[in-house]
Image 1 (cartoon, rainbow, N blue to C red):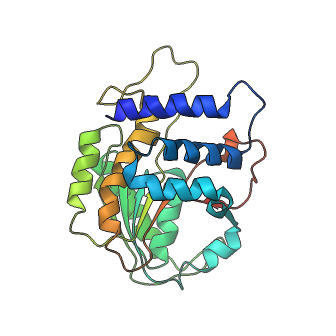
Image 2 (cartoon, rainbow, N blue to C red; image 1 turned 30 degrees about the horizontal axis):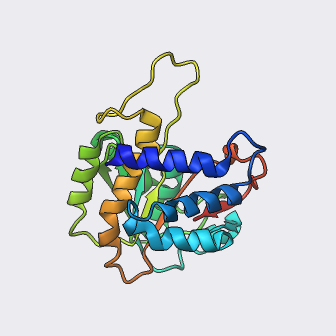
Length: 245
C-alpha cells in the first residue's frame, strides 16, 4: 500500500509541478503538493483536513521564528512530553539537550538503544550544568530517556509506537534523516526493500506519525507534530531562524 501511495503521489506531483520548467519557490511547491494530496483524498483520508487547509492557505503554514525568541520561551512554557527522532547527533541532539535543560521530558528515538542511551546521558549531563553563554537558562525536572526506533525498519517503528501507547505525549519531532553520497554505485535499502533515503526520511516518519497521532490526540497541551528540514534545497530560503510547519 505504501509503495502504491508513493507512486501515485510522485506521478501526480511531477505533473503538477512541471519539473522541467523554472524552479518554484518553497511555498509554491508546498501549495501544489498539498493540492495533490487533496486530489488523492481516498488514499490520504486521515491527513485530508490538514492537506486541504494547506492547499487553501499555504502561507498560514510557514512561520519564521528568530532563535532568540525561540529559546526565550523554553523554560517558561508548560512542560511537554516530547519524542525526537534522530536525537543522538546534530540538530536532534542539540534540541534534546536544550529541552531537557528547560525542564521538559524528552524521549530520544534513535536507530539503536545504545545510541539512544548515550545521547540521553549527554542530555542529562547538560541539564545538570549551570548554563552556558549560548543557553544560560535552566529549569529543574527535565528528563531524557533513550528508546530504539530504527526508521529503516517498519517493524521497529511499529514496535516503538506500540511501546508508547500508554505514554503521555504532547509533541512528536520528525527530525531524523540521512543522505548518501552521489558517488555510491549501488543504492542502500531499508529492511523492507525501499531506497534508504526515501525509506528513512519519509516512509518511516510517515508511518511513525500515523501511529503516534492517536496518542497525541489525547494530550490536553496543544499536541503537535514538528518536522525539521534543511533549507539547502531552496536557494531563496532564509538562512537564519526556524521553519515550523
